[in-house]
Length: 221
Image (cartoon, rainbow, N blue to C red; front, side, top):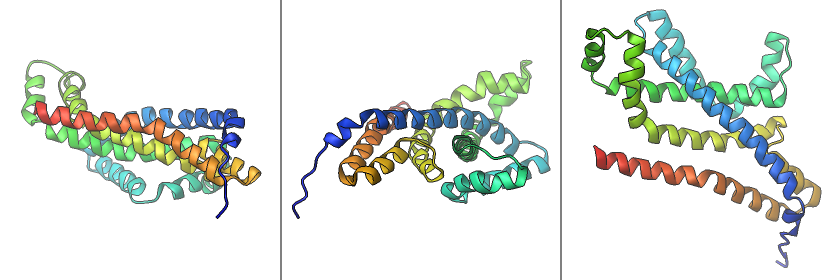
């Protein structure tokens, strides 16, 4: 094998990869922020007294947790417009799929965290005159966030990885740009290696932080 790597193709096209990275971040961050908010609301529905509310939220959570995210991305881009009569842009379809998927997973993290708090704390907060919303915000949530922070960090990392699947529906994120450059210049080794390295640099700090948080919380407990 006489193949000689030439990474100048990467440096010559760094602006293309940078544009892809920015789009990746534009998908990743909103997916996490909106997904966490949706996950909290779903967790409340899963813990509600209303049977139909628990049932609907359970179906939603299981639907998005038990189907591949790739199928969800493709469905929202190709099938959803047929259902509603509105064509979504690749970015909008990817964001919608990742937000809904993230919400489903985040809801179970929140639900597990809330159920880990002794019921007496909620009852005590209600006894001193707090509303359920105030008790949740001031008493329960701070403890849930602390306990579940490693799980939330891991979910953030997973969403960053999943964002690369958006290239399948032509979202011009990092993986899409890498594939485009590879097919244009016929140098997949250099370009895809560079793409993998960029993902590593983007994601590793979160992985490191999650590990440190788990150790810190284990010591504090």
